[in-house]
Amino acid sequence: MIEVEVEAEDWTDAIDDVEAVVERAAVAALGTQGGGIVILLTDDETVRDLNDRFRAKDRPTNVLSFPAAEMPGADPQPLGDIVLAYGVCAAEAEEQSKTLRNHLTHLVVHGVLHLLGRDHEDDTEAEAMEGEERTVLASLGVSDPYTLPNDS
Image 1 (spheres, rainbow, N blue to C red):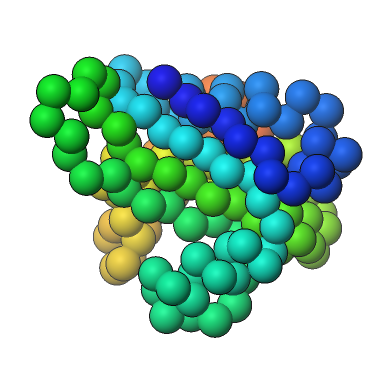
Image 2 (cartoon, rainbow, N blue to C red; image 1 turned 30 degrees about the horizontal axis):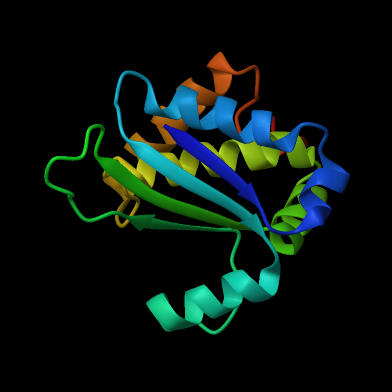
């Protein structure tokens, strides 16, 4: 089960049917894995506050993932929450010459993979996670997010 909550209207102003975009990306990233996810589309200030409280980094970031604790008897088990900051995501998309829709799709996939236990703490983990992201994104028609438009 995937629940999408839109707290910042900038998301709905910028992307038509943003909830469907987010849900499609999350379903693709989950693959055959089950589990509940709540995805919050919010503003930079909310993400800055969460980043400060939970990671001791007093600044907004594009996406945060919060894995859920196991809940005995729950079926499916909740995987956790993903929170995305509109301003940071929009600025990154513009800087990288990407559509906000495609950048959001990538960040949702990235967040879901974190909830599934993937990480990028070292080069080996990063390469594996990025490869998985590329595969999921290609299935959604989104080009490689790690190749900038003027890369050859």
